[in-house]
Image (tube, rainbow, N blue to C red; front, top):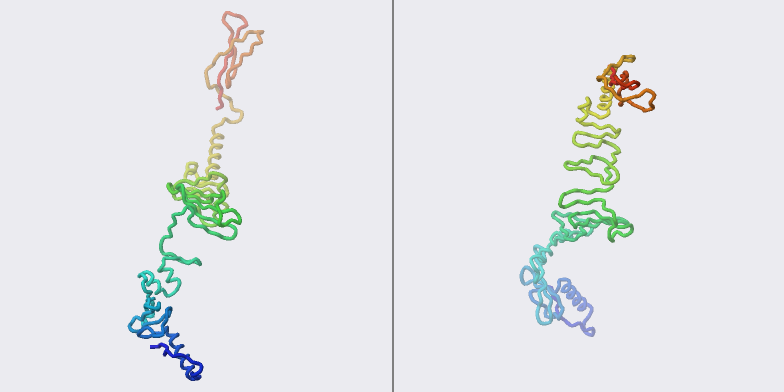
Length: 310
C-alpha cells in the first residue's frame, strides 16, 4: 500500500524533518496513483486511485460518492483494458505501435502503406495523383474508365479536354492517345490496332502482324511474297519485274521482222473518186487494198486487216 499518511502540516508545530517525511509520503502516494487495497481515506471528488486488492489491478476515479472504474491493468502481462470498452477497443489498446494500431483499425497511413486487400471506391473520381502543378485522376462512369488531367496550377481542380487513356468496360477496348514506347514491344494479342488520327511511328525496331513485319527501311516481310519467289517485298517485287521483263523480251519479234496478218480482209467505206469525204479504217486495222464497184464507176471500198508481230 502506497497511500499518504493523512496528516495536517502546521507550520507552527511541524519541524523540518517532519515536513520532509510528510512530503516524501505524499510523493510516493502520487507516483503510485494512491494505490492500495481500498480507496484512500483522504480521497475527494476527482481523485484517481489504483486498487491492488486483486489481479488485475483496477483503476478508479472517485466522484465524491462512488468509485467510477476506468479500466484494468495486468501487472504481469503489462496490458490495459478499458472499463466498458468493447472487444474491438480493448484489442486496439494492445497495439504495440501505430502501424499495428492501423492494422487493427483497418486504416492506412497517409505517409504511405501496404495493403493486402482491395481498396474499393464508389465515387466517379477513383484515385487522384498530384505532382507539382498538375493533377491526374481516374474517372469511372458511362461504361468507361478514363485517365483525366487537370489544368496547369490546378492539381486539385477539375479536368481538361485531354483523354490520354480510356477503357471501354463492356468490350475491353482501349483508347490510347499520343502513345510513345521508349523501349520494348507493343503487342496486340487479338483484335486490331486502330489509329484514328495522326500516325503510327516506329523509330527503332519492326512493326509486326503475326509472322509478317514492316521494317524501318520500308521493306515488308511475309509469306504472301513467296508467291513471287521471295519472303520480302523488295526482293519479290524485283524478281517479278525482272521475270516479266525477261518474258516480254523473249516473246517480242526481233528487230526487222515482218508482221503477219491477224485477221481476214474486212471492207470499209465507200469512197468516191473526187469526193472529200473521209473514210477511216477502225483502230489497229491496216489498209491492204481497194476494191472498185462492179457497176458504178469511181466507187471504191477500203480493204483492211489486223496485223501482229511474230
